[in-house]
Structures are given as C-alpha cells and as structure tokens.
Length: 404
Image 1 (cartoon, rainbow, N blue to C red):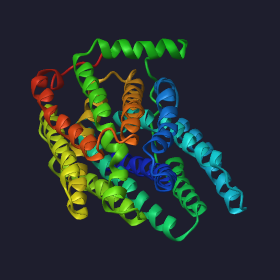
Image 2: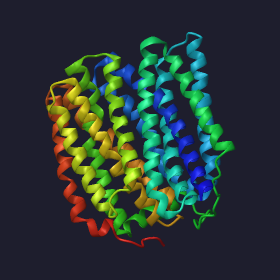
Image 3: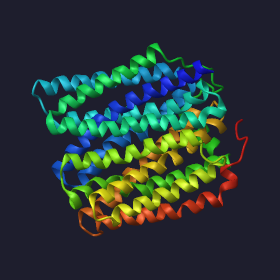
Image 4: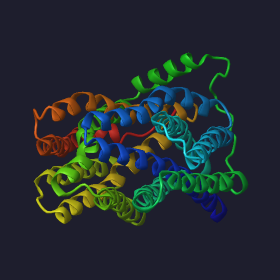
C-alpha cells in the first residue's frame, strides 16, 4: 500500500517538475510581450501560439496514450523539447536574439502540454486504487499549483535581475530532474488496452467522440467545461493588463498577481486533500463554480491592489474543488480503453476556449469599445450563476457505472 502510494506521489512530483519548466519559460515570454506591447491583440497572439498546438495535437496524443507505453511517450516528447530549449538558451548566450526563437519555444511547450495532460490522466487509474483517486488528484493539484506559483515568482526575480537565457537554463535543469525521477524511480504498469491498434488514429478519435455521446455524465461534464472555458477566457486573458493599467507596470506586481492565484490553488488543494470533498461530486462542482465566479467578479470591483490580490487568491482556492472532482469522474467512470482520449478531449476544450474568447474580446478592448473591468466583471457573474447547472444535473453527474 505504502509503496504504491509513494510511487504515485513520485509520478505527480516528476510531472509537476516538468510543468514548472513549461510554465517558467511560458510566463517569461508572455510577460515580455505584455510589458513591451501593452496590447491585448499581441497578448492574444502569443497565447494562441502556445495553446493551438496543444489543441491540434491532443486528440492524437490521447489515442497514442491509449495504445502504447505512456512512460516512454512522456520521456521522448519532453526529452526533445528540453534539449531544444537548452539549444536556444545556448544561442541566446552567444548573443543571437530573434523573435522566431521565442515563438518557437512557446509552440514547443504547447506541443509538450498536448502530450502531458492526456497521458498523465490515463496513468493515474493504473497506479492507485480507485477509492484513493480523488485524494491523489488533490495532491496533484497541490503539486501542480506549487510548480505554477513558483514559476512566475522565480521567473519574475530572474527577469528583473538577469537575462532571459537564465530563465531557460533554470527551466531545463528542473525539467531534467523531473525526467530523471520518472526514468529511475517511477513504475508505470504498461497494461494492454482493449483498443484496436490496427485502427487508424482518426477511427479511434471518432470512437472516443461516440463514447462521450453515449454517456450522460460525460456529456453533462464536457458541455459545462466548454461553457466555462469560453466564459473564463476574458478573465484569463486580461487580468495582467488590468493590473498594469490600474496598479502599475512592474514585474513584481505581475509576479504577485500570478503567484497569489496559484498559492490559492495550493491552499485549496491541501484543504481538499485533508477534507476529501463532498461525497457527491455535483456539490463540489456547484460550490466551485459559485465561489470562483463571485471572486472573479470582485477583481473588477476592487480599487486597492491588495484587495484585488485577495480575491485573486480566493479564486485560486476554489479551483481544486472544480478540477479534482472533474478529473476523478473521468478517471474512475471511464473505460480504461478510452481514458487517454477522454483527457485529450478535455485538454482540447481547455485550450480552445481562450483563443476563441480572445478572438472576440481582444479587438473589443483594443478599440476601447468595452471597459476592461466590465469585460472581467460580467463573466464572473455568469460563472457564479452557472453553479445552478450542477444542481439541475446532479443526478447525471453523480450516476454510477458508465464503465464498459
């Protein structure tokens, strides 16, 4: 029991170290573009370069995760990306700078995310008992949030005092540590999946879509996920610009802004890990939507910076109560033959919402047609009201036995 739990925790730690690498580099590039351009359109472009590769490749990564050795898949993908990033750092150190290098780095990280999220989701049911999955996901939320809040904090310090290549060197070093843990200390059973390997990738992708269409719980969950990602996109896209315009264009403010949210996620994940959440996942999702929506709306109302940071922190507290139950539902109620594809669909939804939302919101704000505070306030209210959806659909969300 202890060995299995320890192995599962080591796997989450290695994944979080790789995630730290991705986010450190991504934050550094995003902040540089935000501060140098002060343009929502430029922020949207760099965001899309990061998210679109994830969206386009996630379904193929999900099929691959359902067919093949997941450990080798993660190691191969991130080994290539880490050494490419290290190669760019060396070129930067030599004094050669070019925009295409930064853009290519963002695209490479997006490709890595396409591999990481579906594959990790498909591994978890194989390395821990079903009744321990929710607590492991809470631990995963804590580990990932720690990586996410430390990435902007460390990245902000380095960008304020050192050159951009220092960020790349740090990120690759941490990623190599995560890869080493995965290689030498983590055991992932290579369980044969009942997916037909002779099928084409597109055939397996279509089979995954049909699997969702045939399950009430998955349809209910994914419909809300699509809605949430579209509505939350203005908040995600414009919160940094809100900080710059309302409170000042300093790296430390951007660092505190990003860090407070992820510290909140750590606090929420620890609380959920100790508590375990409500027995009925519909109640967890109801509370998460209501709390996150109210806190997001308050970001636009607050006039003082530290009041704003408090509600950014609180919005992070509520996110594990949404993420962990949603992940657990997929991991415990989906046939093992489809877990990779189900997480690839979730990854696609999570990555396409921001580009679609930014395509509408960024030009409106760029032309000053809608005040930035109103763009953030309205989605927060809508998300809070959407909590009613989980109450209305509680019988579908809490249903048992959809595995086939």
